[in-house]
Length: 245
View 1 (spheres, one colour):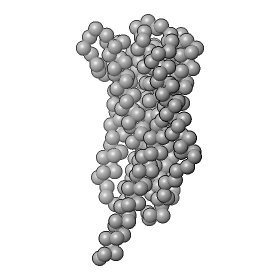
View 2 (tube, helix red, strand yellow; view 1 turned 90 degrees about the vertical axis):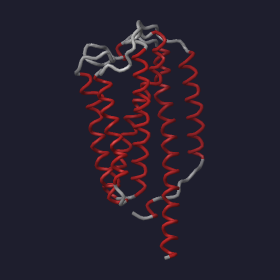
View 3 (cartoon, helix red, strand yellow; view 1 turned 90 degrees about the horizontal axis):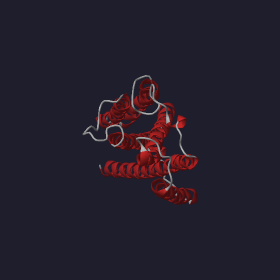
View 4 (cartoon, rainbow, N blue to C red; view 1 turned 180 degrees about the horizontal axis):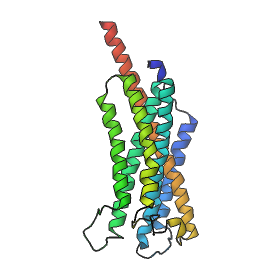
């Protein structure tokens, strides 16, 4: 792995366009989500607005886990540092989105399933599986921090990232759906797609799914740019130190 593996981040009209579109799109979605009409569902009532935020966060968890897995494969194939940087930052965004999704889910459950009680966490299968998944994601960063040699760290982290990606559909989709749970989509409990949701609510939900992916992708691009600049500066400092010796 050399400095040539880290191309200088470029900025141009596509990047500026992404920034503008993401900012406007998400702002409009948030306003409409909070002020627009919603389907009046028993128990959920106005908390159904959380659907506009909860589901996009879950989608971001999946999307950026796949991005991290793709760049991990590229690390194992080519060994280029840029793919290691992209895989790491995609995992940062994925785990961050997962944490926010879990928090919004716990708060949502507290004011629907457990209203009138002091219960926030009851070991629901979906909550438990998400906690396990986030622990697996957190272990990725612990693993990276425990390895000092860059090439070895990149390859081992890439292999672990692929393992983490393979657990995701089982922990989030397959296993929870086969267990009794209050969460929509679990055994004996219909998913939102099977419920009576107003058409305008679906439109806002789809717009939110797209808008938040744009926002998280913008965050991902920013993190990659910053990380590349940090790595290139570190390379220059090390080269200067070697030259001074």
